[in-house]
Length: 167
Image (cartoon, rainbow, N blue to C red):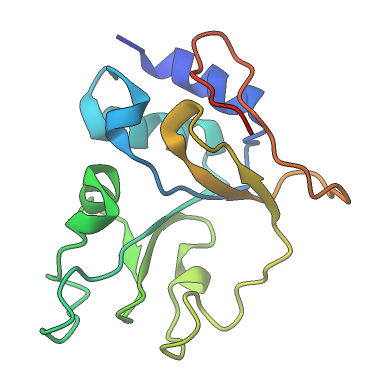
């Protein structure tokens, strides 16, 4: 079983920095056994970002036949972690069928009212660096504002215990 401190260490090895903005879409079944389950993973992600960071997850509606309600529409198709995340106290969710949920310093900006074809708030800048961890730790795709980067290369997990697949 992976504990919170080990997860935070692995996230830092992947380049997640305190104060950054991290967008995570993960298949919890690929993570392995995590102490605290999906909530334990969410807590570790938040700890890696620190109090000045922002955690963001997709929160799209599962049902195109029903009007989207940010206070009630499930996003179970986005995964158990994303569906648990938007329901936590203090997490903001955009009012959009292509919703994102966010917690942290930039949550209000990221979830601000926006057109249906834009998945984030109008002032949320896209100057973030893209990191794709493929099928490695968390099976996550992440956008993180860390250091400026001119390299489009993907980062691969290198921390002890991270599972990897070929690029």
